Image (cartoon, rainbow, N blue to C red; front, side, top):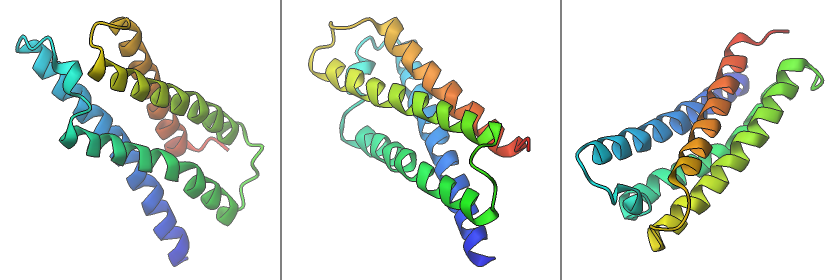
Length: 142
């Protein structure tokens, strides 16, 4: 049972760190833009913030492994609707997150390129996907 408790803790911690880091970046950008800093988006890939992006990436990469291991240890079938739905949402959310990371990195070098509304839409869609996954993990409708 110790392995199961540890694995649950790691999985939930990765989820909390991912959502907390994303929320922190969003609040930092929003506050900077609210103060009138129009170039805040170009600093999203500077050294201190890159560590936040790396933390989110590590959490994002660890979640499918710890999630599958949890499902395997508990004995839930992988064909349950909430497990399949979470997998689809994770795939879409992770794809949007990686695309968002590429767009933000491109904004660092060429701030005039790209549509900022599309970048915001990618961030919001990815965030909604991960919040929905957290809701499905909490509800576990069997």
